[in-house]
Every structure is written in C-alpha cells, then in structure tokens.
Image (cartoon, rainbow, N blue to C red):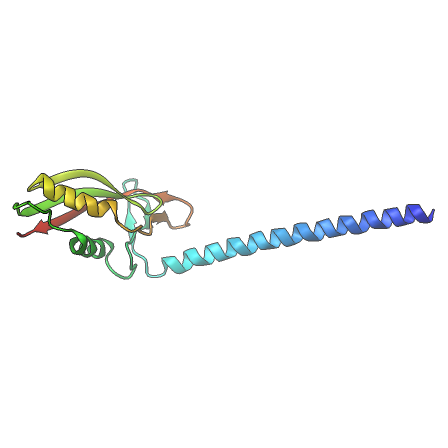
Length: 157
C-alpha cells in the first residue's frame, strides 16, 4: 500500500511540474508577442501612411529615418553614393523605377530614361548595394507590401 501511495504521489507531482512548465512556456510566448507588438507600435509613431491601388491605407516604407520624407531621404543617399563611371564622358539624367520589397530589400524594376548605359549601370550598382528599408506594412502590422518608387539621378561631368 505504501508503495502504491508513493507511486501515485510521484505521478501527481510529475503532472504538476509538467503543467507548471507548460504554463511558463505559454507565459514566455505571450511576453515575446507583447514585445513584438510594442516594437511595431513604437515603429509606427510618426510614420507616414499611403493609399495603395485597392484603396487600402498602409504605413509607407521608409529608408533610414521615418521622420523624413522616405523618397527624398533615399534620393539624397543614392545621389551621394553614385560614382561617375570611369571613361564615360556622358552627362544627363537617369530615371528608373525600383521596388521596396516585403522584406525591405531594394530591387531594380525598369529604366524609364537614361542619357547613357554606363550611367544606368552606375545607378543600378547603387541600388544593388542599398541598405534595407523598413517595408510598407498594413495598419495592423500583419501584412507587408511591395511598393514601387521612381529615382532620378543627375550626372554633370
């Protein structure tokens, strides 16, 4: 009888310990989710919104500083980073479109206008080495969007 009682008590304590561990795991998951939601809320303070094709309002992507205009901030960075191609004597404008992807990376879309192919390659090289943006996201933070922008770069030899 004593052995049976000891065995039942051991099973009872093991069950309680497993239940406590499960509750602790659930509590950790809830804390992680709360921290994630708080980070999202802090990120959206002062952030610009935009309306996309279907009329939905979302948080606009931004480059480095959400308090500045996202396109102007990126345009200034790109103009600073672009290097005039060696051996090229062309001058003029390169106008192209790029996409801020759902993960914040930047990808080339198309050339709208270019004074010279070498100038285009110089601008595309800057896009290829672009830091990540903070991507466009729904107001509830659950869905990310690809957004297309246009970039103009002037080359004056």
